[in-house]
Image (cartoon, rainbow, N blue to C red):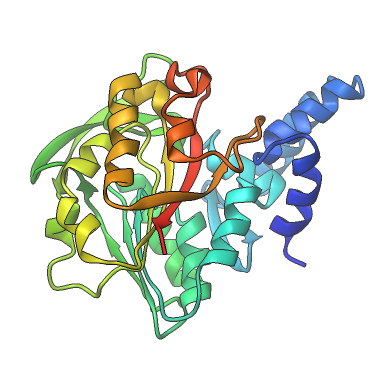
Length: 304
């Protein structure tokens, strides 16, 4: 049994798809506040074993280089060996051999490496990532596993081709093209972008698109109208950040998927049970639309 399946069983009892949140809540339940300090001590010990600022860990069937200076995804994977277990399990369960995946916001490759294993040599993964530091680590992780079915593209996706300012976060998986005053920005850079419709010209027909772009979902949607209508069996896994997009854009974003014939097949949140929420329920969910909820993982596909 994969680690994602084991964790999901426990996580569901507390309605969480995030192992860090799951552990934090468990600590509070049992009065083990010192466990947080113990977790930091464990990470500090791991850091001391790093070579050139990197460690290697076995993560969901792949070897991954992790940057120990990163307080985001690298820290979580170093300690937990998994992230977002519900979504991870959904990826394992949803994809099959031969599929063509477009991974927008591939970061250092956690999901792209999983996707690569599933689709095999008869499929492929187009991994798109604009942040240079992430691209460097992603390329190293692809090479470490000899995965030949991943094509890496250093660029972003937007509503039109050109250049967009990118806000680089202290946590490498929080960098965004949307400024967030709650995010600790350490640098600003310009990155090249194209629309998804333009990107897919001359490439294999996609069957699955994963998108984690920290609030830039709406802009990407504006540049993928042809994509939404062209591929009848296309599935999506999108992390929707309503707190960054805002109420009106979030509603329009989901309504446009509905207008194209899509419906939700899974909705996950670290603490709340959204498993059976429809698009209509999401666009009237005040806690979600108000931004009180950090993000939702939403799986969408066309009605059969």
